[in-house]
Image (cartoon, rainbow, N blue to C red; front, side):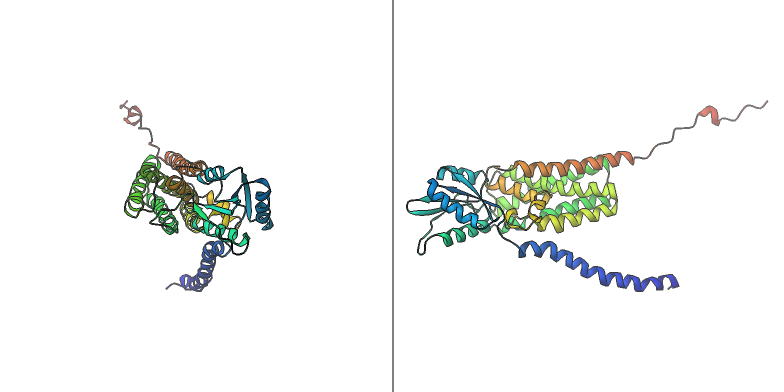
Length: 334
């Protein structure tokens, strides 16, 4: 071993000793911090019924400052439409017999349970609060566990696709076509498993496949595009962003409004969170509220593909012009 290598060994040892705890701390912050701080934050909830009685219910929600965002509706039918359109997660309907709670376990089983506990606690002692699940989760996945667990595989598929294309040296149009084809096949395969086999998705089959495929494309194209622009550093940055932040801030197992700031809003601007919201919309709500996540995923995919095409074109080898034959022929002897 040379003297220079021997001198660098202690530094490398110290770097590893320091970097491993730092990496663990970052991972714990990304995954454990949002889970440990789950609570309603401006959670949209509907209130329907006569004005005087509805005002009392709204006042009780307002007492928990910053927790709920009440929306008023004239009757139960309007409140149901708001739930089906994903404007609110649930609604309290004030009736002469007492409060009637409308929930949507398809939107978030955790929020449905939270609203049930909150409304029951506000009701007079001994009062039974009837609960109607307006948009129910899939019978095969009543707690939404399978839907929440699907985000990490989609993120890993996207990260893997972007990394493989980069490491294989594919550029430009070839890289874009490869990522689009792979993402489409992932969407079809995942839907065949989640919808046809497990039965945890209940929407239109091909729309679900498109949502999953677009999510994977947004992730893979984003990572490959960053790698094309920044090299290996872009590959590492994209992978860490999608897995550490995108997956843990997605809010699919709970709801974005239950995560601490800025995790909830930030997660919806990253492909895993946007993909989870889009898949939930098309699988259970006939595409309601799908516009924003669809736009987010489309932008990520388009920007990533554009980066691949631009960098691929700029890195094409330039062919030197062939030498002029007249210049290369020897001059005739004088």
